[in-house]
Length: 316
Length: 275
Image: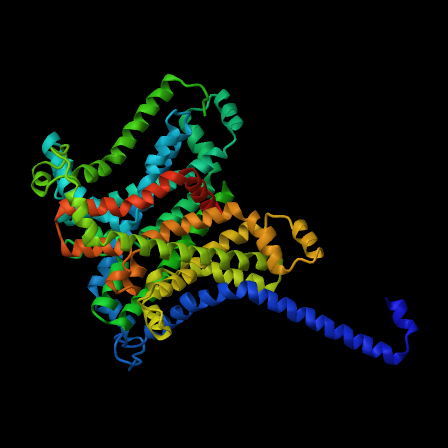
């Protein structure tokens, strides 16, 4: 092409270069348009529904907005000061949610992993069992909460009458301590099957010849589990802990329909507290301030956990 | 681990079956009591019903306007997911195929938003929704689901597109196919496995979602199944005869969906989580 250009006169060379620039501009524009056509809709909805409200929330958290009047008054850090110095109820809900998270994450992962180990054995009823353990997970939290309300109030009572076992005769949802464990039980019942599916997928990736070899060398089943299997599937633990932590921390539906936050607000999660502050008490400014703090805590928790377990993965 | 069916395996099998039965007990209670009269439930909730009463179901069906609630849930779920699939697959493909700083920044932008809890966005979103005139309407809530669903779905598609070779697309390009033609005729069919995962994860979430519909849909005729159920329980507290029938109706569609597609669902869930 350059040879051809050399034979041309200077003038035609100039128009040729101009044309080249124009066509390259045209293809650039065409490329940009193509990019916008494919990526644009996703960005549009994403920004409109998530990003703009997020930044609006940051702004409203510094105001006394009540959701109704158009006058939005700037109050600086007042909402945040109020939350930290004069809101025992919010503090209690944070405490409850944190305690709940630890209990729920541990128990649902232990059960989920246990089920996975069990179903990883060559059982004949493996597929049916997997289905059974997974079923509660397809039901939404709201309906699950209502179902278990019945189980705790009527079902447990009638099992208690039949068997005379103390466990079933507890007041469950009527007492602060047992109501806490009631929510943990329902959460574990819902989530363990999900965790099991992830752990099973990981266990199937473990090289069986490695286990055979260790067995030949006289390793016990327990040391096979702790020294070989668990280190090999650490990534699955990262995922499962990430999922359960964020689900437990954001608990709302299940909590609302099972206990409604009671008895005496003892089981009110942060998500319920925020919802009520904004939509029941009509203190939108305060509600958004709480929700921003909630965001910070969730972000810190999940990042810490992922970096911590990722580090373990590398060490292993 | 050990391939032979030994005594040990048999014992494990028995333990596993017992555990599964315990897992199913709540369903037993809900089902048998949903066909009992109110006083019979109070006397003994564990016993089988003396006679089967379907009147609980017919009464509750009308109170819930169950067919309307079911249709609303179905319409919202189907349209939301169709939109999420279209916008996130297109964006993910283009972003992977146009490497550069812009695509990288956008990807981080989409993914990092996944840590934002819904509660942080919901309060201002209600105001914005009012301004945009998308409150209290089904198309409005569908648009909101587009925005909330796009992060995870785009993330899943992004990971999958990277694994499909570019040669086929390039030869189609040479043959004069347009970008849209290449995407819809060649790329999208190749994305089928991850599309199944995206559909399943979003179905379980949107079908069961309670808080967003509660905030957005005020009219009684726009109620989804979770909304209809919660307003039923607010009105008829402790009336377990009808309450349990309402719960059975409420969980039936998603359980049937699960039982029909369970292989895909369990596989899809595992694939979606491991990414």
